[in-house]
Image (cartoon, rainbow, N blue to C red; front, top):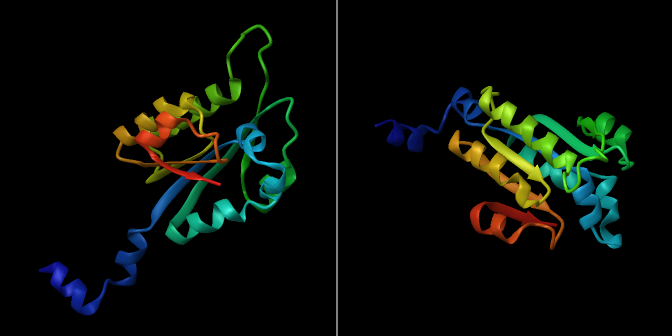
Amino acid sequence: MTDLIDKIFGKTKVEEKEERRKFIILMDYENLEKGLEETQQEKLRDFSWLIDPILKQGDIVLKMAFYPDVAYPPIRKLSKDYGFYCVICPIDQSAKHVDNVDHKMEAFGKEMIFNNLDFTDLIVVGGDWDFKELAWAAKSRGKGVKFIGAKGTISAKLKELFEVEEI
């Protein structure tokens, strides 16, 4: 019956507001930076390509950019202009083949998921297969998962299993 009423009268403003999705964005900055071609480097200075489409679908409750201590992302722009929390991940010289950015980003994401932070969708900017466990954790808790990355940098396995957008 309520479906019929909604079709006739439309949804109330309260109902529409309750249905807005809540997004978390976790960005592997170095992965994005390395994957973009020289002609796309402006995407590292203007993140409206990432933020604006998401805001059309809902609200962004948390934005975090993770990067190694040897990278030089535009922290001021990310933080001041786009509201990202920037996390420096020191490189562990003693641990070979360990991507500390991936490790910290995955650990933080899982903490948000398992501590029931109020969000509906996880956006991962980066396409490493390393993020599969983070994605599965989100899916197992009923969260939407989407990977966004530079063309050619998203794992083929991720493309098979999750929603993906290449830029």
